[in-house]
Length: 164
Ligand SMILES: O=C1O[C@H](COP(=O)(O)O)[C@@H](O)[C@H](O)[C@H]1O
Image (cartoon, rainbow, N blue to C red):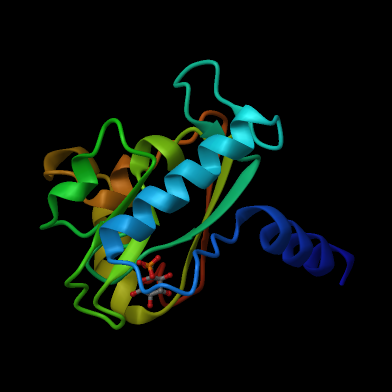
């Protein structure tokens, strides 16, 4: 409960990007969220990675979709290759909602620790691609580009791990 309270308060007070009542485009919302994060770095609320210069989170919880996407970064979107932006957007997610804003891989990978939490049989093939012995033989899925500065820990249920 204390953890939940902490996360809730922290997210609410610092990380939630609450633009004005004006309806923003996904691009405007992503830019606004990036500016918000940069402001939090500038006032020392968020740390920076000395390696990358991006904001550094202690821990991120990340999930994976059945085709290996993470954080709305799908295999077929150029956004998965973003190098400089902190926050990006898509307008055509195959799962609702179609418009999404999301952290980019350089920002995600500047975290110290990432917990990759994957459940369900429909994720088993992508888990096998990412963690199986032939992982290096494939063009990498977005999930395979997740590489935090300290530890990446996978949490799989029995179904998600069934192809390993
Ligand atoms: O399909 C799914 O993908 C997400 C990860 O994608 P996100 O773009 O929503 O972060 C995963 O967390 C979810 O459990 C799964 O159903």
